[in-house]
Amino acid sequence: MAQKKYSKKKLAFFKKHIEAKLKNLTDDLDDSRGNLESNIGGSAGLAQESVYSVHMADAGTDSYEREKGYHLINRKTDYIKALTKALERIEDGTFGICTITGELIPEERMLEVPNATKSVDAKENEKLNL
Image (cartoon, rainbow, N blue to C red; front, side, top):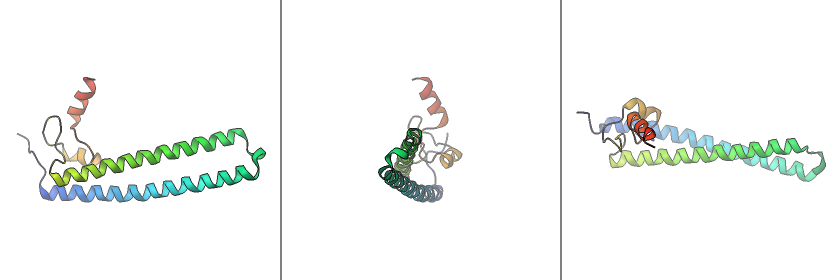
């Protein structure tokens, strides 16, 4: 029978790993927001000064880049929320336990996908049954 919980030492290791990921993501998110704000300000100022000199294709490209930036910010924000929930699972003792099988999710998976709540087999079976 498989082990049902990670040891306190392992959980502390995972917690440090997740906190480091959160720090990097938060810094990256701040940079992304700053870049997006500076690009919007620059484009808006240019557009107001010389409305007719901005080519329609350039305006479309700018719009696409802004939309892509917002999408990336949303993805990073969602991942931050998922990692925060993983930290909560560490605190309540459910981290690394598959919600489908109740078995311990392998350490390698938890290092790569620390917000995982299902083992690879359970996730694949779930997709096949949809």
